[in-house]
Length: 98
Ligand SMILES: NC(=O)c1ccc[n+]([C@@H]2O[C@H](COP(=O)([O-])OP(=O)(O)OC[C@H]3O[C@@H](n4cnc5c(N)ncnc54)[C@H](O)[C@@H]3O)[C@@H](O)[C@H]2O)c1
Ligand SMILES: *[C@@H]1O[C@H](CO)[C@@H](O)[C@H](O)[C@H]1NC(C)=O
Image (cartoon, rainbow, N blue to C red; front, side):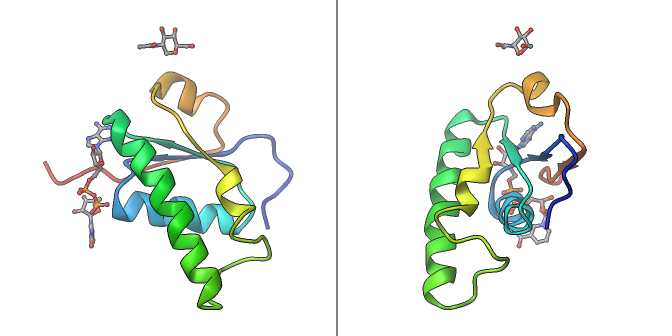
């Protein structure tokens, strides 16, 4: 489970790989801020994460001790990178190949 440290985790890039990391940290009880340069993609990511966590719970494959309703409440979208990283304890980037 997450430590009581105040800061949360920031995941930069919110497609398949970034979304998977966001779910993994939330399953451990960490607060996650999810940033993407495409604002629309952030909303897609949060919706996909909610669906995927429900699917995992139904398949009895959900990680961690929090439910598929509780885990997404730890993940918030943020479209401003300055605000996303403020106070973060861990920042992880998953950008496309250049
Ligand atoms: N999908 C896979 O199976 C897979 C497997 C291994 C490695 N990878 C690598 O992982 C990385 C992420 O892959 P993916 O499939 O999740 O997504 P992707 O590469 O299709 O998309 C990455 C996301 O990052 C966003 N982005 C791009 N530039 C950005 C910036 N400057 N700041 C913030 N966000 C930005 C894009 O809008 C997009 O939503 C890639 O480098 C990929 O090569 C992917
Ligand atoms: C992002 O947030 C910072 C800090 O709150 C603010 O100074 C900046 O103007 C914001 N940027 C945009 C594009 O809103």
